[in-house]
Image (cartoon, rainbow, N blue to C red; front, side, top):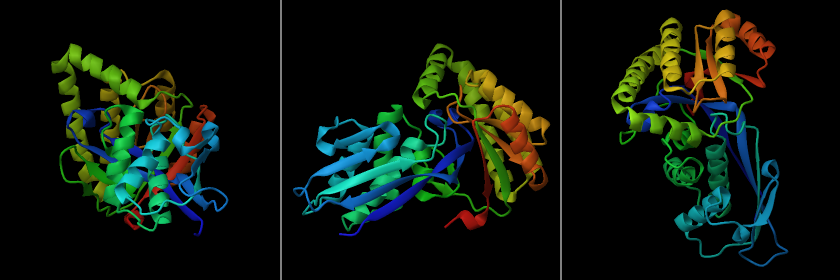
Length: 318
């Protein structure tokens, strides 16, 4: 059997984080400058059915059967095998690597899962559809996040910009004009499930106040959908700043995020906000083509651990 190599991109949320958990829409796009990879190598020296998982980034080198049932990588393998139900399972090694920052709001866990499922199903001769991969990844995401929104598995599996709303049909955005985005990592790592849980506690204490915030974020996201499709940078920037103010009201920003957001705006960004769970992780700035370098330099000088530029355009919708 040949070696199989598959990858999956990172992602960034443009609008709607946190509110999406409460039934409001969100917009997310794939980020192909970073990705997770899964390589599967046949092992003819071992008994059939022996599966080894190696992930250097987390110092893992173990037989599949030795991992806990709720280990995300073991769960991804198990769910894939259950979905395919192969007549014969050969012996092989799965090698996992990723350039996506962990606990930074860029979907590192979902990307690893998507790459693994994509590679394993192809290796076994039964490649799964993007929809099935997304559904299986969502089950693994429950291990990572408890109550995931469904954004990460969806945008990463389909590798297209999406307008996402729970319990509604997925909408792929038909981008008419390109937009330019600069992403900066604070270096602060806060797992998404922690910030989601903290916001849920506040919501439980004062549902009227927080439902109003979520509704406002949802309204901004609806407006942003139209502006993003048309490439209306000025309108998008204004909406980003409004969204950031509401995220601050939720208590999910941080001094490092606030600093980078301020530096990006000062350097000419049309708008800037945190992205993902918050309290660390990444922020994102909307740039004009002529000030991308200035924004990147300002964020680097302000101490960003990594700065990534990505262009959203219709050609990305493969």
